[in-house]
Length: 492
View (cartoon, rainbow, N blue to C red):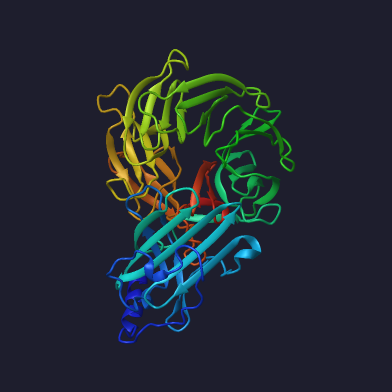
């Protein structure tokens, strides 16, 4: 129905008319101020912006992470704008920042300029229609002291993949923290009747005793990427990975959920943290995997670090089972290695070099050992977008870490985090929301339920939007969503 409605709208347009809205103001001086000089293709359709309004998937096919989902609005009478973009602010002298949006019926153009000390940042963007349903776009970036960068992209129409829900019911939702700020959530863990959330807006503690009415009870300022929690029966302690790579991993006493308190930093930065019993492992975005004993969680003890064998591009995340470590080594793939007899000895067991290795999970499904490997980069996978790879997980097998099957929603959406419980994989799938996949036959994954958490009308349009973190606890599915905060689901 959505596609039919779009075709009817396009058919109703009078393409014999010239689309020439009031173009509005442009900068009078500076770099990249002329929309007609932006390097768009010669195939731009004159007056083609009449077909611009709506949601798009815009991707630079030469890069891992240069993609977005902008929404445009406007008409040939009023002009065209990117929805949720900044308001026009032409006064550079006021706050060191200026912003313009402009359109002439053929080209959409936006430009921002920011001065920080002696450094000048300019970002310019232009787009046009090259067919009845295709967008060409170009991005230009200028920073003082470095070469200018130009990126070309192609856009296609975008909308939610399917109906709102199948097999899942939304039980409860919480979008605001204690300060009234929308929770920009990345990951979470559940302990007892509390959800502990890592968010760009802070460390959030949510009372989930009544899943239908979750309540924010604790908050600690900061910007966090990941969280794990140790409850030793006396203390509840959170280990938080920072958003900023220049910062260190935080230790926070959350024993009183209404007053989480910073205790100390661990010695290293971490992008992600993994808890195996009372051992905490850090993904440091370099070749090392530090290990801490957190038996006494307020005073963790560093035991040393493992070194990822072979070529290394930086450990983004990891999964640990006993002496076996699965390191998500970004562009160098998923690396499985053993640290017997100790951390100083790293023996590579296998490697899956596909896409941009982002997350992994080792377990049993369908009666056999499997490894779930998720890449995240949108464009370099041979299948078009990041997806889930199901690998042979038996180290004794001659086919260890070879591909059994793969699962993907569609080429326009990347995958984030996931868990394996029994024969079911629970996936936080960005703009495609929550997806549950049956792996009772690992060679033939089958989606059995979904819920589209991403809301087309209100999403800003960034690449990393929607469902990011997911946990299955006591029959409920808890999701960290960077646009909606905490979502709680039940399988039907």
